[in-house]
Image (cartoon, rainbow, N blue to C red; front, side, top):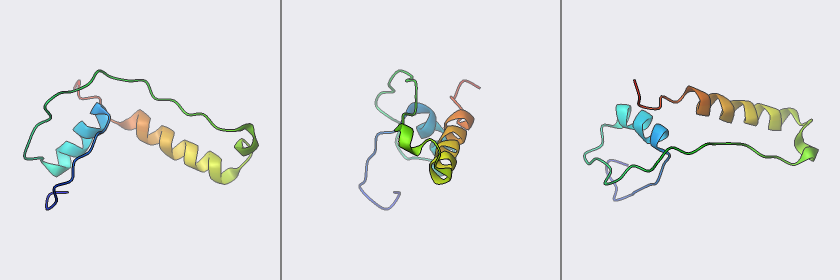
Length: 70
């Protein structure tokens, strides 16, 4: 994004994690309150190995993000 005019809206924890590597030139104007994350899926996909893998990946990313509190 450094060479573009792109903007984005991200959860705070994710934005802080990305900012460590990306070194943004501007700080956010406002940070929103923390929000809970959850996953929902149709019962048809509960037995799907591919869907289970995807749920595991999403869960791992969300639970390993640093919340910026130290």
